[in-house]
Length: 78
Image (cartoon, rainbow, N blue to C red):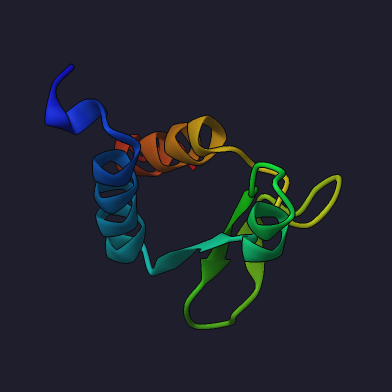
């Protein structure tokens, strides 16, 4: 397994891509402390509004969904 496949490396890459688009990746820490997987959301840095990962409930996006959303932004589809 290469380093780029580790979750921490993947998250760092996604944070850099999100920052280029004025977004921040938020993680639900409370859920992690309860032993449940923490969800994620994307927040616009200017308005502080969550733009992805808040439907049907807050922090409902997983890393795969966040990565797909950011890939669409990079491709200019969003």
